[in-house]
Amino acid sequence: MIKPYKNLSTSKKEQVALMFNNIAKSYDFLNHFLSLNIDKYWRRKTIKILKQSIKNSNDSVILDIATGTGDLAIEASKINPKKIIGVDISTKMLEIGQEKIKQKGLSNLIELKKGDAENLTFENNFFDAIIVAFGVRNFENLSKGLSNMYRVLKPNGCVIILEFSKPKLFLIKNIYNFYFLKILPFFGNMFSKDKFAYNYLPNSVLNFPEANDFINELNALGFVNTKYKKLTFGIATIYWGFKK
Image (spheres, rainbow, N blue to C red):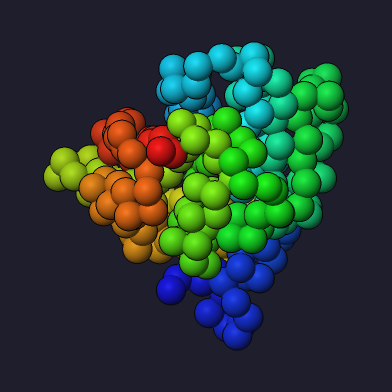
């Protein structure tokens, strides 16, 4: 199991919460700067698939897991759902997200609260859709987190997951590895002041199941009609499926 802080004996979940609390102030800036703003395009593509996957967005209640500072929830607001609830284990990220949502006049639509994907407190069959951006690889127990998502999703509801992946084309793969393993940690460490966080990021991606391996994880838990779409030469991938 890959953890952010090798020098700590605490659980991965506790370390992930600590890491995001530490980098919360610089998170949005680094997200956009280090991805050259491509992360915004990836989120738009994710919400486009969401819109295509739900029957009536105006009546939909959506859960955004690992919402962080709320970027995906804010993007999802553009399809005019009934309600969006975002959960995250980092209180500092949520504080920044709540301020962003307030400034955009979305407080009545988007509610952010502290929550753990592996121990969701919502009732069974509660949400019409669940969305996640760059969060599932941080789960301490991937199967438990995904099964919790399945539990709170309504029958025929959809789950849509945006996650980093590894390019396969030789040239892109080599450029990506140099950037991901050398450039990104350098700037991440410089701006975030957390020397572990942006070394954990590439390691967590390299050790995460992707493509058909991740689809198999979804299928094993009962999701059906599962698909994936690679973005930007395979640097990121969108996965989606439905509850029976």
